[in-house]
Amino acid sequence: MLRWKDILYYAKYSNPEPPRRVEKTEAEWQAQLPSAQYAVLRQQGTEPPYRNAYCRSYEPGVYACAGCGSVLFDASTKYHAMSGWPSFTQPSAKNAIRYAFDDSHHMQRIEAVCNVCGGHLGHVFPDGPEPSGLRYCMNSVSLMRLAE
Image (cartoon, rainbow, N blue to C red; front, side):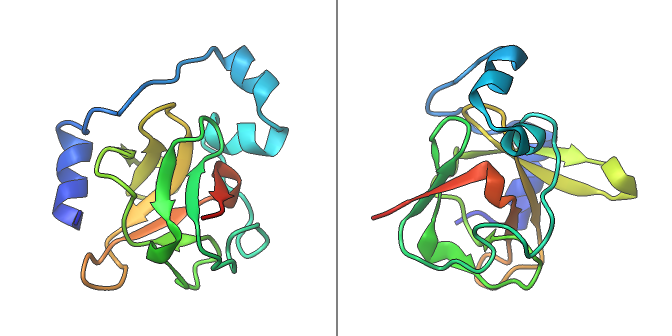
């Protein structure tokens, strides 16, 4: 189980190696992704709170990266955080997410990025429920839910 100290370590020193890599040019990403997905995944945008596909969805399955299809979260770790975006307590695997310090918008946060394709997913915070205390606050448009 990952904890906040693990996230800080990864962001500061070294992230786990991804299971594989997907690398494309920005032109290839732009041709592949709809404009809303491109804006978030490749340009670090944010979708509007509460008006997104998975904010209030709690169906079973797994959530994968909308850019490369890598499995990121299991629906069993999703919870109602009242943040306006889908929130999870743990990634599906230790090496599913890459972490980086993000000082944009006059805030200090930890950015969560797909470790396979580098797509921006959202941010992780230390204010989630126990036992991990983590809240992975993700953009719905960065994810696709796969049924069980």
